[in-house]
Image (cartoon, rainbow, N blue to C red; front, side, top):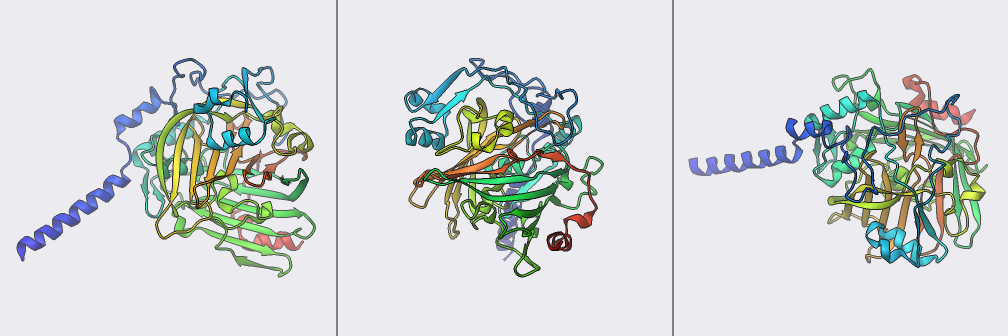
Length: 453
């Protein structure tokens, strides 16, 4: 009996130790690399072997004279000329530097191309975010089964990630330029037949209590993102609202929807995963919003590695263009989209046994400097590549930030349709810092009051 009890206790001890190892943060020695060979957020500080990716020297933080909050940002690299272009005729030469979805677009459309510009490692954040990131490196932990994060505040949680879930949490908790934002936007749909449609015009406010500068890990309540959306167009949806509260413990997430016809707020537990996103008229899924929206716990997440990839980057010119000039038949106007070579983390998501999702496999490409998801390839149940999601990162040096919270969308590689969401191209203002409102601003009751006015 005693030997069996000892064996049981030993097995339990090993199991507990294994759980602890799975959750362990990095050592102080590893974290010290954030001050030497790694950037303060965890990218490789040095350039690459052939110099096509330069050294990171602090990012881009030069604010144009006279800039006012919310104004359209100028392109700080407007003087750059393309180094080369990639099209169907020469894509094999660059195959190792292309996402599978990018290759599919080049093969599908002979007139599609990538204009590749000099790489500008523009991503930056304030020193206090760097300081918090250094602390997070040795204290943040992840429960892989539940995706719950503990011990992180005010910076990248896992600057030296050990698994795919940590990489995607770095996107969720990435620096977006402050703690409260306002971003009015349009959603544009391009049909397979080449007809441009406006799916939505809305106002969007969101807040990240995780980045309250005066806060701390000890006082932090756990909500990392709170958002409120109020629809203005089309007229059939005017007044419709959405409220989301995302928590470091995904089991505590909550969402509410206000429907004009019912004149009431109701809980919306399906605002996640592969539920069709009403903002895109159901063309996109909720978990594709902002490149990642909500939990990813239906998939196993594996780091495949890092690679040098041609990706959309520093797209202030595209953000300032008129939508008719940018959103054209078949694909976004190649004359306006800037591509650069960057190192990215490659994370493969495969559906867990017993779970369901209409996109059972995805490949995420995550920028090493900003932790923004730049591209995503999506595969169907037969293993066929069917979706290619993209983000045109905006550089806002006054914050400073390189953000993918604007100008993101998806190509349907089968039908030929695509959409561009979070577009301010035809609006007077862009993504901007917003005065921090009272806590009641982000409540279901406030959403109902706003919608009924």
